[in-house]
Length: 450
Image 1 (spheres, rainbow, N blue to C red):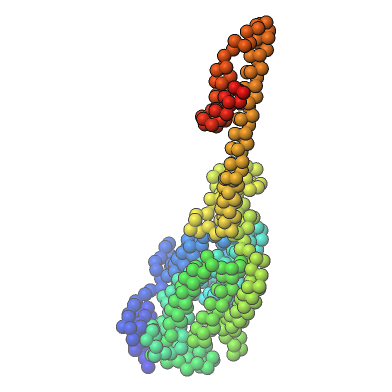
Image 2 (image 1 turned 45 degrees about the horizontal axis):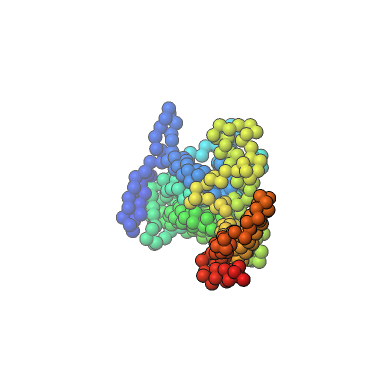
């Protein structure tokens, strides 16, 4: 075995697939500073995660103006936590003769050396502290954040591909890969005192290895699609966080068992043990929550559906519009503007049963407004009776008035009034009562003649 039989340091191959790449880990140089592809890819994953997460915070009842501080703090905490976690597990490699040299070795992350679990722990700790300060609800914030985690992890793992690190044991799998740096790492680590030798691994430098970065990247991107789909169907705050823990914990437990560079605590792979613990805990909690919600679903209300979330988002919107001070505060329902979210993303809108109640009230009002036919007929009969009584009184007044007027005139020609006058009055009265029936008129004339 000679050095010349190995691939060039920056060559990467997938022998079964016939793929060959030549990638220099250094992307470019600015003022003498080498910018690594590793850092660029990590940054790209972070940017894509932020682009996805921020517009969807309102769906979780989170005010993005308040949450931005937690995101920035979480990013910083994640980077610091990932590095400190890795350095702590490999302290002998970073401890130098002086503090200055040690510090310089610790902060130099351009060539890798970040532990994902340290990053998650650091991001969550710093993020939660800022959430408390900014009064951002923790569980909804975690739910939307873990979706971003999966984007960042799925993209960021390709930094390991460029650096030819985080690979697994030898394999004949069709996705097996190799590279100049991978071959040299295996060759050196299998020497007496090397990491792989001390771990009891049996590695051959000239055979392909498991592309663990690729397995994890695909798994995380699939997890992102799953959680993004389920985000509109979640039953309680924190559900997506538990799903993330189970999904990533399962994958990392399997893939970590293939890797050759695991952080060890004695004979225990630290990340594999942590993954198993996270997966089991998450599954147990999800089972408990399933039965609790099934037994009493009304006790679990998403924060996004609360009045507090609605008012905070509306208050923030008013401030962005330039409304400041007391005018920006929301005091009650009359001050709240409903159109906070779009119809596609809004899960806070009016509940369906309220809409049904409104429709029922409208129907009841419509029914009450329709008059009863029986009452209408009764009113018509009463009105006709009143008209008849009024007509009789009018006739009596006319007759009485005529008699009084004749008496006042002192006229004794009462016998000279023709009989036809009374007959005409009787006919007119009959017409009012009977609509012109001849029978009523005949009886009246006959009665008057008698």
